[in-house]
Image (cartoon, rainbow, N blue to C red; front, side, top):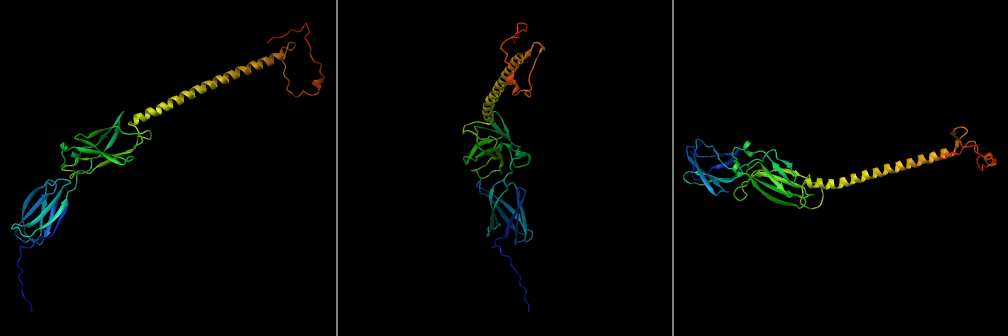
Length: 289
């Protein structure tokens, strides 16, 4: 036995299986068990700006797909789907993808400050307007403090008064809107080239000056020491030369016309028996060195 049952759609029931899919900066909403050939209302509430928009969608079968465009990056929304006769609703909350981080963030060191440079977000983000600008934050790892440095509509930012011995992390992102609720992804760069030293305001040039103040006196003392060493060696050489000249003159033989030196091999007990010379003959000239 069997029976034929005809189902009557109940427009008092809410749409079921409502879900969303990211498609770039837009959202596609899908729902099953819609009533065919019915008019549905899709309400989009901006939870940040506190505004509402309502879109009308006509169903053709039991599954409806609808794309919501012009959603702001980093926004928060509440989406409500219901029949046009204000029946029960299905809803969900979504967060859009924030703006991406700036590319090619780098640091250039100047005499008394550093410059942060990055590429414009407008090159890859069609939803970004340069008038929105960027904001810059700095984290001091030694003090464990994060500081807001300011914002700019340019693609560079000047940072001064960095401290020697501190390591810093800089972040650049699209400027936050509406109470810090809509921000871009940050690009982060570590700056640890200041070295160590006293806790005073200075840049790398200050460190280079301190190094030069130490190296220059050391080099000067080294040169003075080398000069004194050369003088001492020269004086010793002259003294040895004079001593040798005096020694050679004292062993000069007028008969042979040259100085005579003993090798030491013929020195011995026989030298003790040799008569001591007490004077010089009148016919032997005396040589004075």
